[in-house]
Image 1 (cartoon, rainbow, N blue to C red):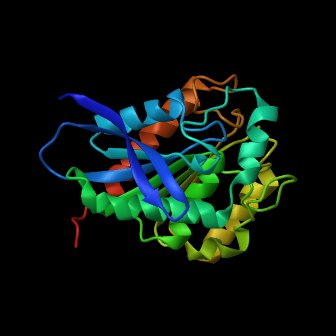
Image 2: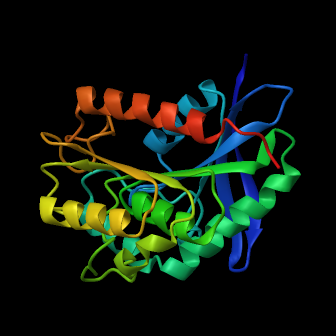
Image 3: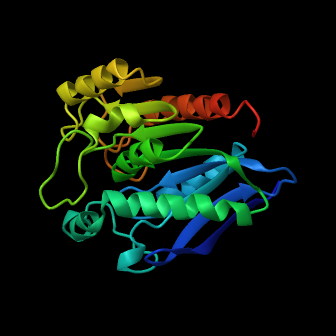
Length: 247
């Protein structure tokens, strides 16, 4: 089957937002995975994740969370000074609004099953995925090394959501790197304890020898073994949460 990847432009309360989409040319409606970007934008890596999801039978969508700053805003890996102002411009309310606009648009897409939506995010997208899981009725939520869940960061407008983790409304899957200085082991354990205390159905997996960004094969931190295992777990998780049919 042919892989279809293209941009759509949708309306949000704060203007137009481009969304990269990918799917196979199928006749039936497909479960949706909203892929939430790293701090570097909807770049080649994020598009590749969308393509991989499409080949696995999902309808993938990656909204450009930097749309308030321009169209197709991308920063090269390693250019920290360039992405910090962009990252600093994101807000919790803005991310929730963008995800809502993406979900609302699903009714216009013949291949997208609006009743089966999950989120998958990396880095700030991991934070965004958690935020989406707190605010929308999703099938599943996946967060790869979502930083800032427990504490605020200088120059970043995003506010921690640790105290509200009990609001997660779906089964959740977290991945962390054991060598990730931005999310140290004590923070990971605190997140686990909070999720257990709030009885949130979840798995929190730590790859002990991996660092922040271990899933991305375009970053120095790439860990091939951990990435392969995490992807296998991710696909199984998405298949499981989408087993039951749309109500």
